Image 1 (cartoon, helix red, strand yellow):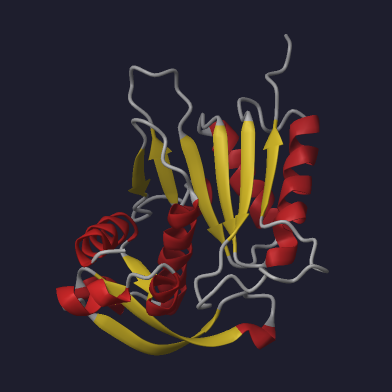
Image 2 (cartoon, helix red, strand yellow):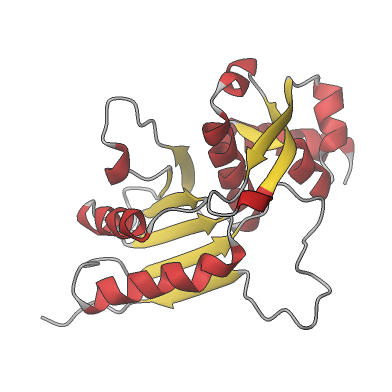
Length: 222
């Protein structure tokens, strides 16, 4: 990747998600742009990347376009980095715009971490975007219900715990069967690794865990 493309990609990514880790930028061959742009860096910061796994402590270095975002609590830094990884793994759709949701003054449990918004001229199918480093079952349920109540028809759920993808999908299936996800037509759960220099599950033929789980929920007949 040439340097011009690197710098454009880094500016675009950090402009949308605020923070990424130097480790994930290395994975995507974007670190030269960090040096050329003279971007602010914070680290190493010891982070628990999966809140339910005590052995998931990793020293991470965070990068941003603006130094003020690097003063965020480490929980927020990891949220931003998880969303950055999700954005890297998500294919862009025509007309779609990614927006972080400012939770200040709102009820956090009812709002997504980000939204993917489509033009008003298109039938509404905006996407509720969430990063999950180890939510409780009740928290997952509340978030999914909130997505339905708020009128989103799609949910894009990033998870840093590889084994939880099917669990999130199962919770959503139960809610859908009991008419608690009215209007939600699609759920996509994606494993995001923002701390490794490579895909740690590649080249492991005995590992059959998926990196992405998708559910399609047809509209209910009335």
